[in-house]
Image (cartoon, rainbow, N blue to C red; front, side, top):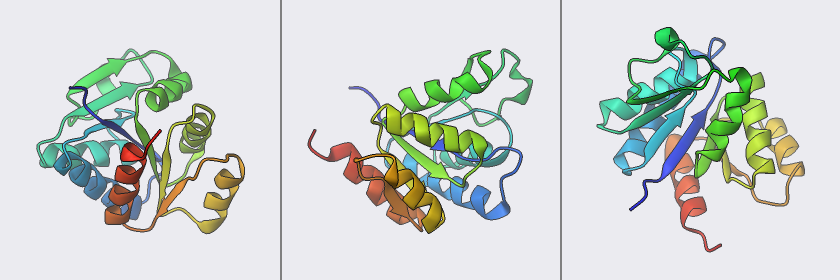
Length: 165
């Protein structure tokens, strides 16, 4: 049976303490659901925090890194894909995920949300501003999830995974 992969996207170097705490808790909750966590794989920001959270709960983690050099890899990544694609790896992140969760907002995360919308992947925005949410919602007819807590985000993920096609 195929595993459900939830992509957690968010700022790397510019992530705030709150975004990293939220990503850690989200990674834990996704692992508790039996889902796989996919991130950008680096040892910074939201991607590292989400991966560490999932590992702390016994979850499986995948990281799609932007370079062919593993020196930036999070120690919490089980399966590392050294893409050597730079920012183009954002498309791999999105297309490899059944649902994309944006935990915070940076330039890379913005591109991943846009790519997810274009690929008709479900998106959940966690702790994003109302203005950011409205901006992305105007770009698509699909409903983008909006959550203020990790529990709400998990409910939104579940709803998007199990809604009829």
